[in-house]
Length: 276
Image 1 (cartoon, helix red, strand yellow):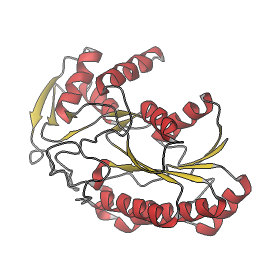
Image 2 (cartoon, one colour):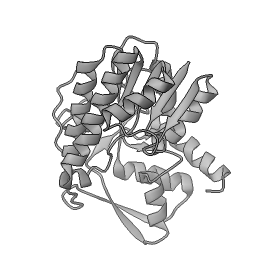
Image 3 (cartoon, one colour):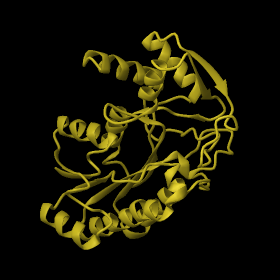
């Protein structure tokens, strides 16, 4: 089966493509220079030539804080891009996978979010991803919308590497302890997406199992890496960001996923085995 992946050069794309290939799929990775998802005619010409059976749409604007300053760009990529890929998918009869975010929720719930829960993003990034979801639902029938959260992977910047790097420069690090979510390893997410294809079309939540705060996530990273730098818990108000974050955005999994601590252990050990 032929799978076209948009945004293949991003953190998730660089882990998803090998996972799909290892499981017998023929993957055509497309970076921004290969496929501009905001250009309908150009994207259609490229995709029609390839004729994929599945399009995994990962191309996205992901800078949460910067989206507050340049919402037009965020919406152009996250909404218009998804709309274009959805239309092209329907025309070709291809299955579309759209990866979305826990930030479509406002974080006021006290229990994990299900796919059917009320959507109410509190920042421009979350709203742009929600508009992308709506574009997919309204323009193609064969789709999987996969919401995930707190991603870290083998390529690119992520919270794990940020904490490790900061520990080499600072004697103490303040980390927010009043936001809860599900840290998710991109390799596990990729396997989860693969396992979801073939199930009924619709919306799925896929994240590593269990919940934690950024502070406790950092504590586990330091424990596994045997880092002695002091971690100090703080509130969101003490660590202000341009974009509001949901206080509680834990996702209730639609499929069985392994615990986040187990995934983090494997990620760190694998990076160490590569000398990174």
